[in-house]
Amino acid sequence: MSRRIDPTPSPEPHPSPLRADAERNRLRILVAAREVFAQRGLDVTIDDIARHAGVGVGTAYRRFANREQLVEAVFEEGAEHLIALAEQALTHEDPWDGFVQFFLATAEDFAGDRGLREAFLEGLHGKIRVAAARDRLIPAVSALIARAQQAGQLRGDLESTDFPLLQLMLGAVTEHSRTVAPAVWRRYLVLLLDGLRHDRDHPTPLPHRALDKDEFDQTMA
Image (cartoon, rainbow, N blue to C red):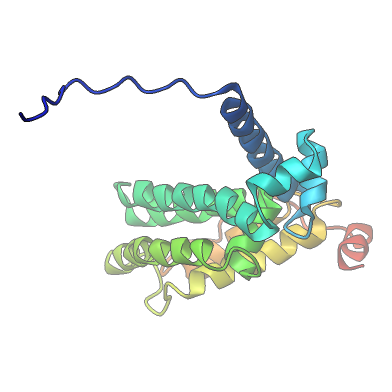
């Protein structure tokens, strides 16, 4: 006699208190890592992150075996955000304004998040998943560049591989001036954009004054 199978699925068991607690700890560690990486960069230890999260070091290592796993978990999300920025900029009615919108938005993200800048522009950590996400960003950046070039608004010799290097240049300004004049990178962003534009009637007003001699000495120290 064949056995009758009940098609009604069994209810999912409720997560045990231990599993729920482990997930809460994992999320606390991810939030702490995001904050620590943003403020201090990637040259921190899991001990530093565990301390910031308020969990034991052993708990942190049970969730993430090493710093690389944490970097990839945190910045894969950051990569998705950058890709979304590029796709949003592609919908802008004016190709040049879309290009500027993306350049500015990514520069703001890199200026405000030291870890994101290091992961994406220096590539020393998170080499597998972050690098894969970076590769996914290239077609969107290429489309933004091609669109503005075809409209005659962007110089024709700019390539998609130039974009991260231009951001790296701004990142160097951000890194050296962050305790002296944290917004001075905006001055150099405008100078870069004026150099990239194919035609312009007059120079764009700079949004930040130049550093004075004392600030310059502190920045270069």
